[in-house]
Image 1 (cartoon, helix red, strand yellow):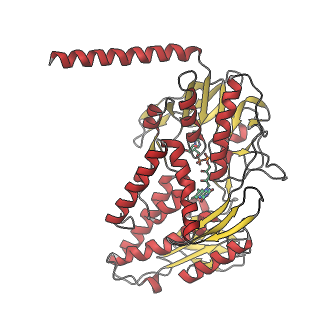
Image 2 (cartoon, protein in one colour):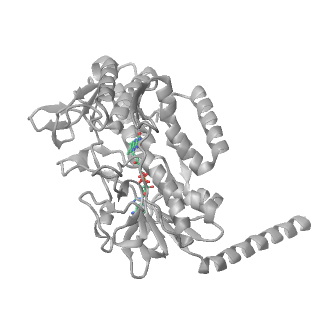
Image 3 (cartoon, protein in one colour):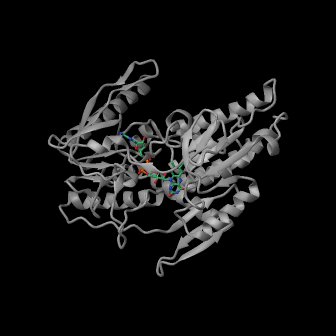
Length: 460
Ligand SMILES: Cc1cc2nc3c(=O)[nH]c(=O)nc-3n(C[C@H](O)[C@H](O)[C@H](O)COP(=O)(O)OP(=O)(O)OC[C@H]3O[C@@H](n4cnc5c(N)ncnc54)[C@H](O)[C@@H]3O)c2cc1C
């Protein structure tokens, strides 16, 4: 007994000593602060923790407690995955990968004092969790992603659900399941629009959501909601102001996707400009009305408002921080921006790097190298975006897209099994960057087994 207590005391002392030594080392260490732990920021701090965690003080500032890779949000909304299986807890990730996690939302910046200002956090009952505070930096990387752009359309904020966070995606799924449970038990017949879902924005997010919803709503009914007739009562409408679905991708992908959506019975309305969203549905600018009690807004992105007035840093019309090819902001070489919130010039084009997961992944890798060069006093290198193509999952078994060849730069149309594998590889790369190859492979196996034994759709 006393041996065990002694061992515990020695263990505690060693840990306390280690923490003291780390704290002393930290006082003189270069302070790297990354704000935003999403697709780009979390990969960056994890990588930096491994490479520099013993010599530099690496801090992640993040307003959420856990991370879910954003391209999974449509699957959360449709109920085809359980977010808990995919979430990464920031505190644990920080502990395992030698960086610190500071829970808080960036609300301002003081470039003269080199401090990021964080808002206080309060819980649901209004009790303060963390106070307002500041975090000092020597090198700052801003990676706070993007939010949905409603272009000022009336009624969107009140009646449409954006798919920006796991909380919103889960809220939509809860509303969907509730609408089905209510239709099953209500006295009268199913109302017009009650089990209709209108998705505004036929980009990759909206299209994938429409296809996933087609499957999960039918599976939901198959679990015993016998008063609902899927053919008669469920309607999924995908709308876009552009003349074709997936307007940003090559035409052949649009055509094939449209064919697959049509086969499923998803209704596509292109050239449809939304004038207003109400509690009953969507009014289009031509005066027509689409009855739909559930509306998802997935049409366009902008960077968060906080960037607009961030101590004089240059921004563009959608609030993105303007950066040089080195990823440094134009007005402060100690501040970098990566991911969706950065407007980074795209080599050989007049435009900027697109807000996509593969860009976030590439920029995180490049940024880690830049920081090492900066700490060694070496010149920084320009980042060049490489487009490997785009893949869109249209239902469980269909993926379509194009792959861009490395040497020729030509795009090749792909679909089917191989396209599905490539689609999953982007997430696998993110998992691998966060947890290493072995962990990522085991996680895939565990989820596959869990899916074989549990329901294919989230039922609550
Ligand atoms: C539903 C959906 C589906 C998508 N599907 C695809 C796809 O199939 N393929 C593809 O390439 N791309 C896809 N994207 C785009 C892709 O997810 C983004 O390009 C990518 O996540 C950008 O990474 P990021 O790190 O810049 O931002 P994010 O991943 O959004 O991370 C930003 C982080 O910053 C935190 N944060 C925000 N504000 C603050 C603040 N003020 N203070 C502190 N922390 C803050 C957030 O909590 C978040 O953790 C999809 C996006 C969505 C929404």
